[in-house]
Image (cartoon, rainbow, N blue to C red; front, side, top):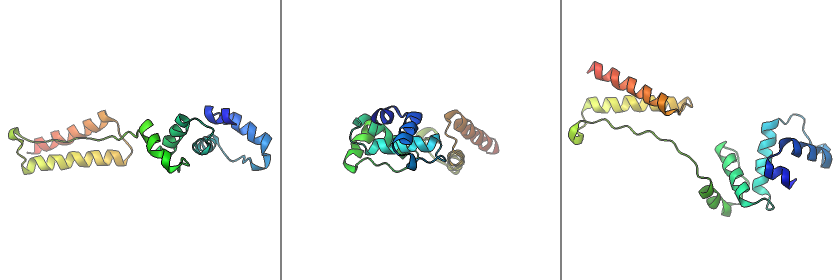
Length: 143
């Protein structure tokens, strides 16, 4: 069982459960559900090395699933596997950093593009940059 948990061995864990507790096996459980169960068990099992428990904690929290890692271990796990946060910076100004109504409109337009892409789940920097440039160029021509 420990080896299957450490290796995230989906087939091995299914065979083991079929042998140990056949009445608990659900045929409806697909590979994804089995993997979720493995990661959940890894965060709970004290016999699993911390680095694997920490990885499973991050894997679960990235998917908005509950982690069973004890609260006192979570800060250490989050330092070991930090969460990546993406961001976009927008700066539109003239020399001397003067902002006119035009500059504020361009910043709002570019910000709207970024928000729309993120709302659609698109986080590709090249795509976002192209969308921002399109808005910037369009507003510049309208000026």
